[in-house]
Length: 427
Image (cartoon, rainbow, N blue to C red; front, side):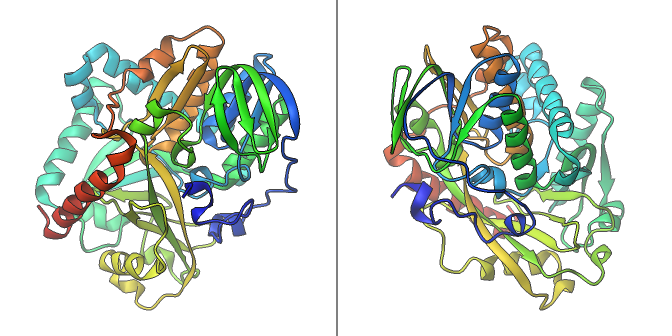
């Protein structure tokens, strides 16, 4: 079944803390009949709306469609962490692509964070600071080495290594042996940020149609459930929620589900985090968490690889949360929700020209808060005839999953089961 509808009701945001603390406004009208645009964009999330904003500011006539609502997908459900770089570290990128391309990619990732900060309204609640926690002494050595590499080779002094004592002064968990703190990274209320992007794009002249699903794409034509759009250029920006509209994309981007719980407000949030930062850790099935502005712990840390969500989200999330923070005891969970993201084989985004007139960006693999921003900008630049930075992102290694789209889910399930076992065994 299409992931657009397997776990959610049409046009209704999930029962998340983000939705409960946002005002999406009245639903926008769907597309009915025929329309034309210079650029048609599928997906009203971070990527599509950033591209729409940048294109509209350049004078392009832009139409954005979404099967549900603005920010309905991963852009309105994620952990809100706006980190530095890519899932492949800079040392590996240097080895695989060379120093010049690796430096260009790093510079783009730096610009991505700055652009999120610049585009975020005050109510999106940008806060600086993202920590990376290490579970083993060996991981600490690697993390310190990488921080030193960024300090020296990239003149990036915003990241620093913290030993176990210093790290646990901030992150009050007994499991971490040390880690890093990146003060130029940050965290944000993702749904509010996305809703703000939509308002900016519309103010610049873009049109947004909600409850409008793309069923079929041809050269310069999108057929929807109630109409059609002809356009000189098409952007596919649906990430993990994108149906199999293109075989090249489907073979390289696999949808997986991730889940978050929000506790009741904590009487003493400094008993969990002494600073208002976000945290992720070194587990392959990563734990990620931060405090909300109303003193809840927002905690994510489990995945599944089928289309459907599990019937019970909370139990396994609570187990992981209490393993990290036993002091939470029987703290109530007020909200739980899941969402679908897109991942690639190498866990870096797919940025690609699928046809001469169709571009795509997806598979952000958990780094989408920052990287979708620069991806949307570079998509807009490429359509405007300036493709150099788009080509830099397109050089990221995104091979097809073995067996293509048909085999990607079962193979990924086997691989992730193995990595989950390694996490539990501490290998």
